[in-house]
Amino acid sequence: MARLTAEEEHITESYILLEMARKVLEKDLAHIGQAPIKLKDPYIRLLEVTLHRLSKELYTIKMSMKTHGLKIQLNNHDENFSEYIIFFHGYVLTAKYLNTHLKNKVSHQIENLFTQNKQESQ
Image (cartoon, rainbow, N blue to C red):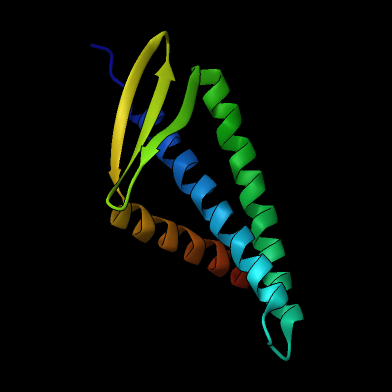
């Protein structure tokens, strides 16, 4: 049975987390745009800058996936688990992630993206 290398595992996990973070931030941006907040612009700008940075990272990860021959597809998800199918080098691998684990990782990823914004603006 074929296995992913450590680098391929890192690429796979990064792709999954970045995709989820992008979806969360896009939803939040839509909600903030409609929320009754007095000063929406700073929040919207922060989310837009973060989404732009995230898109750049996602582009880099997708290029790495292409060079390593990796494709990732969400297969199934329920309340507790999300299942991804990973295609690589002619093999198929199924990976199951606990949703709470993914949520914590995505939260940490978004937090890192926000703090990168803060560090760059100083």
